Length: 227
Length: 162
Image (cartoon, rainbow over all chains, first blue to last red; front, top):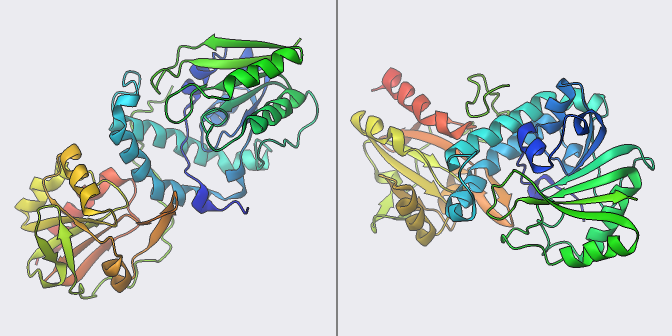
Protein backbone atom coordinates (compact mmCIF):
# COMPACT_ATOMS: atom_id res chain seq x y z
CA UNK A 1 0.00 0.00 0.00
CA UNK A 2 1.35 3.40 -0.96
CA UNK A 3 2.04 5.74 1.93
CA UNK A 4 0.06 8.92 1.22
CA UNK A 5 -0.28 12.18 3.07
CA UNK A 6 -4.02 11.48 3.53
CA UNK A 7 -3.10 8.66 5.90
CA UNK A 8 -1.02 10.87 8.16
CA UNK A 9 -2.17 12.72 11.23
CA UNK A 10 0.93 14.62 12.34
CA UNK A 11 1.01 15.18 16.10
CA UNK A 12 4.33 16.02 17.75
CA UNK A 13 5.49 15.98 21.33
CA UNK A 14 8.02 18.23 22.99
CA UNK A 15 11.57 17.55 24.17
CA UNK A 16 10.47 17.66 27.81
CA UNK A 17 7.72 15.16 27.18
CA UNK A 18 10.29 12.78 25.66
CA UNK A 19 12.61 13.24 28.64
CA UNK A 20 9.77 12.40 31.01
CA UNK A 21 8.10 9.63 28.98
CA UNK A 22 11.39 7.75 28.68
CA UNK A 23 13.07 8.88 31.91
CA UNK A 24 16.03 10.11 29.87
CA UNK A 25 18.87 11.00 32.27
CA UNK A 26 21.67 13.47 31.55
CA UNK A 27 23.84 10.46 30.72
CA UNK A 28 21.19 8.93 28.44
CA UNK A 29 21.00 12.22 26.56
CA UNK A 30 24.70 12.05 25.69
CA UNK A 31 24.21 8.64 24.05
CA UNK A 32 23.46 7.80 20.41
CA UNK A 33 19.65 7.80 20.32
CA UNK A 34 17.29 6.55 17.60
CA UNK A 35 13.67 7.77 17.69
CA UNK A 36 11.37 5.38 15.81
CA UNK A 37 8.17 7.06 14.62
CA UNK A 38 9.09 10.49 15.97
CA UNK A 39 6.96 12.24 13.35
CA UNK A 40 6.85 16.01 13.91
CA UNK A 41 8.16 15.85 17.50
CA UNK A 42 10.55 18.52 18.77
CA UNK A 43 12.82 16.00 20.52
CA UNK A 44 15.41 15.67 17.76
CA UNK A 45 15.63 19.42 17.20
CA UNK A 46 16.08 20.37 20.83
CA UNK A 47 18.33 17.41 21.70
CA UNK A 48 20.58 18.38 18.79
CA UNK A 49 20.69 22.01 19.96
CA UNK A 50 21.76 20.72 23.35
CA UNK A 51 24.65 18.82 21.80
CA UNK A 52 22.92 15.44 21.66
CA UNK A 53 23.13 12.76 19.02
CA UNK A 54 19.65 11.82 17.77
CA UNK A 55 18.38 10.31 14.53
CA UNK A 56 14.63 10.09 13.91
CA UNK A 57 13.04 7.65 11.50
CA UNK A 58 9.45 8.02 10.32
CA UNK A 59 7.52 7.45 7.09
CA UNK A 60 6.32 11.10 7.06
CA UNK A 61 9.87 12.23 6.32
CA UNK A 62 9.27 11.42 2.63
CA UNK A 63 7.21 14.64 2.58
CA UNK A 64 8.59 18.18 2.54
CA UNK A 65 8.08 20.99 5.05
CA UNK A 66 5.17 22.59 3.16
CA UNK A 67 3.35 19.27 2.80
CA UNK A 68 3.70 18.42 6.49
CA UNK A 69 2.74 21.95 7.59
CA UNK A 70 -0.34 21.87 5.34
CA UNK A 71 -1.43 18.52 6.68
CA UNK A 72 -0.94 19.70 10.28
CA UNK A 73 -3.17 22.70 9.53
CA UNK A 74 -5.87 20.47 8.02
CA UNK A 75 -5.97 17.86 10.76
CA UNK A 76 -5.25 20.02 13.80
CA UNK A 77 -8.92 20.94 14.48
CA UNK A 78 -10.08 17.37 14.14
CA UNK A 79 -7.50 15.98 16.55
CA UNK A 80 -8.27 18.66 19.14
CA UNK A 81 -12.00 18.12 18.77
CA UNK A 82 -11.55 14.40 19.38
CA UNK A 83 -9.46 15.20 22.46
CA UNK A 84 -12.19 17.54 23.66
CA UNK A 85 -14.78 14.76 23.25
CA UNK A 86 -12.62 12.28 25.17
CA UNK A 87 -11.37 14.76 27.75
CA UNK A 88 -12.01 12.41 30.67
CA UNK A 89 -9.53 9.86 29.33
CA UNK A 90 -6.65 12.28 29.94
CA UNK A 91 -5.07 13.92 32.97
CA UNK A 92 -5.11 17.72 32.65
CA UNK A 93 -2.25 18.65 34.91
CA UNK A 94 1.02 19.45 33.14
CA UNK A 95 -1.15 20.17 30.10
CA UNK A 96 -3.96 22.25 31.54
CA UNK A 97 -6.68 22.22 28.89
CA UNK A 98 -7.51 21.19 25.33
CA UNK A 99 -6.55 24.71 24.17
CA UNK A 100 -3.28 24.45 26.05
CA UNK A 101 -2.67 21.06 24.44
CA UNK A 102 -3.23 22.59 21.00
CA UNK A 103 -0.72 25.35 21.70
CA UNK A 104 1.84 22.99 23.22
CA UNK A 105 1.62 20.52 20.36
CA UNK A 106 1.72 23.28 17.75
CA UNK A 107 4.81 24.79 19.38
CA UNK A 108 6.53 21.41 19.30
CA UNK A 109 5.56 20.82 15.67
CA UNK A 110 6.73 24.30 14.64
CA UNK A 111 10.05 23.62 16.34
CA UNK A 112 10.28 20.41 14.31
CA UNK A 113 9.34 22.17 11.05
CA UNK A 114 11.93 24.91 11.64
CA UNK A 115 14.62 22.23 12.03
CA UNK A 116 13.34 19.81 9.40
CA UNK A 117 15.24 20.90 6.26
CA UNK A 118 18.54 21.23 8.09
CA UNK A 119 17.96 17.99 9.96
CA UNK A 120 17.20 16.13 6.76
CA UNK A 121 20.42 17.39 5.17
CA UNK A 122 22.34 16.34 8.26
CA UNK A 123 20.76 12.89 8.12
CA UNK A 124 18.86 13.36 11.39
CA UNK A 125 15.41 12.81 9.81
CA UNK A 126 15.35 9.58 7.86
CA UNK A 127 12.31 8.30 5.95
CA UNK A 128 11.64 4.73 6.98
CA UNK A 129 9.24 2.47 8.73
CA UNK A 130 9.32 -0.35 11.25
CA UNK A 131 9.70 -3.30 11.20
CA UNK A 132 12.73 -2.59 8.99
CA UNK A 133 15.47 -0.11 9.87
CA UNK A 134 18.26 0.80 7.47
CA UNK A 135 20.90 1.15 10.15
CA UNK A 136 23.91 -0.92 11.15
CA UNK A 137 23.97 -3.45 13.97
CA UNK A 138 24.66 -1.65 17.22
CA UNK A 139 24.67 1.81 15.62
CA UNK A 140 22.74 3.25 18.58
CA UNK A 141 22.80 3.06 22.37
CA UNK A 142 19.07 3.66 22.94
CA UNK A 143 16.19 3.20 20.51
CA UNK A 144 12.89 4.87 21.45
CA UNK A 145 9.34 4.24 20.29
CA UNK A 146 6.90 6.97 21.30
CA UNK A 147 3.18 6.53 20.71
CA UNK A 148 3.40 3.89 18.02
CA UNK A 149 4.09 0.35 19.27
CA UNK A 150 1.34 -0.89 21.66
CA UNK A 151 -0.71 2.29 21.07
CA UNK A 152 -1.95 1.01 17.71
CA UNK A 153 -2.42 -2.54 18.99
CA UNK A 154 -5.67 -3.22 17.11
CA UNK A 155 -3.96 -2.33 13.81
CA UNK A 156 -0.60 -4.05 14.35
CA UNK A 157 -0.19 -7.76 15.15
CA UNK A 158 1.81 -9.34 17.97
CA UNK A 159 4.22 -10.61 15.32
CA UNK A 160 4.70 -7.10 14.01
CA UNK A 161 5.53 -5.91 17.52
CA UNK A 162 8.10 -8.70 18.02
CA UNK A 163 9.67 -8.06 14.60
CA UNK A 164 9.82 -4.32 15.20
CA UNK A 165 11.35 -4.68 18.67
CA UNK A 166 13.86 -7.27 17.38
CA UNK A 167 14.90 -4.81 14.69
CA UNK A 168 15.27 -2.01 17.24
CA UNK A 169 17.39 -4.35 19.39
CA UNK A 170 19.54 -5.18 16.36
CA UNK A 171 20.52 -1.55 15.85
CA UNK A 172 20.65 -0.57 19.53
CA UNK A 173 21.75 -2.00 22.86
CA UNK A 174 18.62 -0.82 24.65
CA UNK A 175 15.01 -0.20 23.62
CA UNK A 176 12.37 1.91 25.40
CA UNK A 177 8.70 1.96 24.44
CA UNK A 178 6.02 4.35 25.71
CA UNK A 179 3.10 4.02 26.35
CA UNK A 180 2.02 0.44 26.99
CA UNK A 181 -1.64 1.36 26.47
CA UNK A 182 -3.55 1.12 23.25
CA UNK A 183 -5.73 3.96 21.97
CA UNK A 184 -8.71 2.78 24.04
CA UNK A 185 -6.70 3.37 27.24
CA UNK A 186 -6.31 -0.33 28.08
CA UNK A 187 -2.94 -2.07 28.44
CA UNK A 188 -2.02 -3.57 25.06
CA UNK A 189 -3.09 -7.17 24.60
CA UNK A 190 0.29 -7.80 22.89
CA UNK A 191 2.30 -6.89 25.98
CA UNK A 192 2.31 -10.26 27.84
CA UNK A 193 3.32 -12.23 24.72
CA UNK A 194 5.95 -9.67 23.78
CA UNK A 195 7.58 -9.56 27.23
CA UNK A 196 7.56 -13.38 27.45
CA UNK A 197 9.15 -13.63 24.00
CA UNK A 198 12.06 -11.37 24.91
CA UNK A 199 12.54 -12.93 28.37
CA UNK A 200 12.80 -16.38 26.84
CA UNK A 201 15.23 -15.06 24.22
CA UNK A 202 17.64 -13.86 26.91
CA UNK A 203 16.96 -10.17 26.97
CA UNK A 204 16.57 -8.12 30.10
CA UNK A 205 12.91 -7.07 30.23
CA UNK A 206 11.56 -4.42 32.57
CA UNK A 207 8.34 -2.47 32.86
CA UNK A 208 9.32 0.81 34.49
CA UNK A 209 7.14 3.53 35.98
CA UNK A 210 7.77 7.00 34.56
CA UNK A 211 6.87 10.48 35.79
CA UNK A 212 4.84 11.30 32.66
CA UNK A 213 1.11 10.62 32.54
CA UNK A 214 -1.29 12.26 30.10
CA UNK A 215 -3.38 9.38 28.76
CA UNK A 216 -4.99 8.19 31.99
CA UNK A 217 -3.00 5.16 33.24
CA UNK A 218 -0.24 5.69 30.66
CA UNK A 219 2.70 6.00 33.04
CA UNK A 220 4.87 2.98 32.27
CA UNK A 221 7.46 2.16 29.65
CA UNK A 222 8.88 -1.13 28.45
CA UNK A 223 12.68 -1.41 28.61
CA UNK A 224 14.48 -4.16 26.68
CA UNK A 225 18.25 -4.69 26.93
CA UNK A 226 20.84 -7.06 25.59
CA UNK A 227 22.27 -9.02 28.51
CA UNK B 1 13.83 27.01 27.88
CA UNK B 2 11.18 28.45 25.59
CA UNK B 3 7.60 28.68 26.77
CA UNK B 4 5.64 26.06 24.87
CA UNK B 5 2.37 27.46 26.13
CA UNK B 6 2.68 30.56 23.95
CA UNK B 7 2.72 30.42 20.17
CA UNK B 8 5.12 32.81 18.45
CA UNK B 9 3.48 35.75 16.64
CA UNK B 10 5.35 34.99 13.45
CA UNK B 11 4.09 31.43 13.12
CA UNK B 12 4.46 30.52 9.44
CA UNK B 13 1.17 29.88 7.69
CA UNK B 14 0.70 27.00 5.26
CA UNK B 15 1.31 27.83 1.62
CA UNK B 16 -1.83 29.11 -0.16
CA UNK B 17 -2.52 26.42 -2.74
CA UNK B 18 -4.90 28.78 -4.55
CA UNK B 19 -7.91 26.58 -3.81
CA UNK B 20 -10.06 29.61 -2.90
CA UNK B 21 -8.96 32.31 -5.38
CA UNK B 22 -12.19 31.89 -7.36
CA UNK B 23 -14.45 32.80 -4.44
CA UNK B 24 -14.26 36.58 -4.06
CA UNK B 25 -17.14 38.22 -5.93
CA UNK B 26 -19.06 34.97 -6.26
CA UNK B 27 -22.72 34.81 -5.33
CA UNK B 28 -23.62 32.40 -2.56
CA UNK B 29 -25.77 29.67 -4.11
CA UNK B 30 -29.31 29.17 -2.92
CA UNK B 31 -29.08 25.92 -0.99
CA UNK B 32 -31.04 25.07 2.13
CA UNK B 33 -28.94 23.73 4.99
CA UNK B 34 -30.10 22.26 8.30
CA UNK B 35 -29.19 24.47 11.26
CA UNK B 36 -28.50 23.45 14.85
CA UNK B 37 -31.28 25.90 15.78
CA UNK B 38 -33.75 23.51 14.15
CA UNK B 39 -34.54 25.81 11.23
CA UNK B 40 -33.36 25.67 7.63
CA UNK B 41 -30.99 28.36 6.38
CA UNK B 42 -30.43 29.49 2.80
CA UNK B 43 -27.17 31.44 2.82
CA UNK B 44 -27.86 32.73 -0.69
CA UNK B 45 -30.90 34.62 0.50
CA UNK B 46 -29.20 36.33 3.46
CA UNK B 47 -29.26 40.06 2.66
CA UNK B 48 -27.12 41.36 5.54
CA UNK B 49 -23.44 40.92 6.36
CA UNK B 50 -22.61 37.34 7.27
CA UNK B 51 -19.45 35.66 8.39
CA UNK B 52 -19.27 31.98 7.49
CA UNK B 53 -16.68 29.76 9.12
CA UNK B 54 -16.11 26.60 7.16
CA UNK B 55 -14.33 24.07 9.30
CA UNK B 56 -13.59 20.33 9.41
CA UNK B 57 -14.71 19.63 12.95
CA UNK B 58 -15.40 21.94 15.90
CA UNK B 59 -15.34 25.65 15.60
CA UNK B 60 -13.92 27.63 18.49
CA UNK B 61 -14.80 31.21 17.58
CA UNK B 62 -17.17 31.91 20.43
CA UNK B 63 -14.78 34.38 22.09
CA UNK B 64 -15.16 36.90 19.26
CA UNK B 65 -18.82 36.29 18.58
CA UNK B 66 -20.16 39.36 20.39
CA UNK B 67 -17.68 41.66 18.63
CA UNK B 68 -18.79 40.32 15.25
CA UNK B 69 -22.43 40.72 16.24
CA UNK B 70 -21.74 44.32 17.31
CA UNK B 71 -20.33 44.88 13.83
CA UNK B 72 -23.70 43.85 12.43
CA UNK B 73 -22.56 40.44 11.22
CA UNK B 74 -24.51 37.21 11.50
CA UNK B 75 -22.17 34.31 12.18
CA UNK B 76 -22.58 30.77 10.85
CA UNK B 77 -20.37 27.73 11.05
CA UNK B 78 -20.56 25.22 8.21
CA UNK B 79 -19.10 21.73 8.22
CA UNK B 80 -19.79 18.39 6.58
CA UNK B 81 -20.65 16.87 9.94
CA UNK B 82 -24.15 15.54 10.53
CA UNK B 83 -26.71 17.77 12.28
CA UNK B 84 -26.51 15.43 15.30
CA UNK B 85 -22.71 15.82 15.55
CA UNK B 86 -23.08 19.58 15.19
CA UNK B 87 -25.68 19.74 17.95
CA UNK B 88 -23.32 17.83 20.23
CA UNK B 89 -20.53 20.31 19.40
CA UNK B 90 -22.75 23.35 20.05
CA UNK B 91 -23.60 22.02 23.50
CA UNK B 92 -20.12 20.82 24.41
CA UNK B 93 -18.37 23.99 23.23
CA UNK B 94 -21.18 26.37 24.27
CA UNK B 95 -21.25 27.92 20.79
CA UNK B 96 -23.47 31.01 20.62
CA UNK B 97 -23.99 30.81 16.84
CA UNK B 98 -25.71 28.37 14.52
CA UNK B 99 -23.91 25.53 12.79
CA UNK B 100 -25.15 24.46 9.37
CA UNK B 101 -24.62 20.98 7.97
CA UNK B 102 -23.38 20.51 4.42
CA UNK B 103 -23.35 16.75 4.85
CA UNK B 104 -24.29 16.24 1.21
CA UNK B 105 -21.43 18.55 0.07
CA UNK B 106 -23.87 20.43 -2.16
CA UNK B 107 -22.70 23.88 -1.02
CA UNK B 108 -19.09 22.65 -1.07
CA UNK B 109 -19.55 21.44 -4.65
CA UNK B 110 -21.26 24.57 -5.92
CA UNK B 111 -18.65 26.86 -4.37
CA UNK B 112 -15.88 24.39 -5.21
CA UNK B 113 -14.43 24.50 -1.69
CA UNK B 114 -11.26 22.59 -0.77
CA UNK B 115 -11.70 19.36 1.17
CA UNK B 116 -9.34 16.79 2.65
CA UNK B 117 -9.46 13.23 3.92
CA UNK B 118 -9.17 12.21 7.55
CA UNK B 119 -9.59 8.62 8.66
CA UNK B 120 -11.56 7.86 5.46
CA UNK B 121 -13.87 10.85 6.05
CA UNK B 122 -14.12 13.79 3.66
CA UNK B 123 -13.97 17.08 5.55
CA UNK B 124 -14.10 20.74 4.47
CA UNK B 125 -10.86 22.67 4.96
CA UNK B 126 -10.93 25.61 7.28
CA UNK B 127 -11.72 28.89 5.53
CA UNK B 128 -13.73 31.99 6.35
CA UNK B 129 -16.00 34.00 4.07
CA UNK B 130 -17.48 37.43 4.63
CA UNK B 131 -20.55 38.03 2.45
CA UNK B 132 -22.82 41.03 1.98
CA UNK B 133 -26.09 40.91 0.10
CA UNK B 134 -25.46 37.31 -0.84
CA UNK B 135 -22.11 38.08 -2.52
CA UNK B 136 -18.73 36.92 -1.18
CA UNK B 137 -16.65 40.02 -0.37
CA UNK B 138 -13.66 38.54 1.39
CA UNK B 139 -12.04 35.12 1.71
CA UNK B 140 -9.64 34.10 4.45
CA UNK B 141 -7.65 31.07 3.33
CA UNK B 142 -5.60 29.27 4.47
CA UNK B 143 -6.66 29.90 8.04
CA UNK B 144 -3.86 29.23 10.47
CA UNK B 145 -3.54 29.16 13.39
CA UNK B 146 -7.31 28.80 13.77
CA UNK B 147 -7.55 30.82 17.00
CA UNK B 148 -6.18 34.00 15.37
CA UNK B 149 -8.62 34.14 12.46
CA UNK B 150 -11.55 35.79 14.25
CA UNK B 151 -9.40 38.83 15.05
CA UNK B 152 -8.38 39.11 11.37
CA UNK B 153 -12.02 38.96 10.30
CA UNK B 154 -12.98 41.70 12.77
CA UNK B 155 -10.10 43.90 11.60
CA UNK B 156 -11.15 43.43 7.98
CA UNK B 157 -14.78 44.34 8.66
CA UNK B 158 -13.66 47.44 10.58
CA UNK B 159 -11.58 48.60 7.63
CA UNK B 160 -13.98 47.64 4.88
CA UNK B 161 -17.38 48.21 6.45
CA UNK B 162 -19.78 49.32 3.74
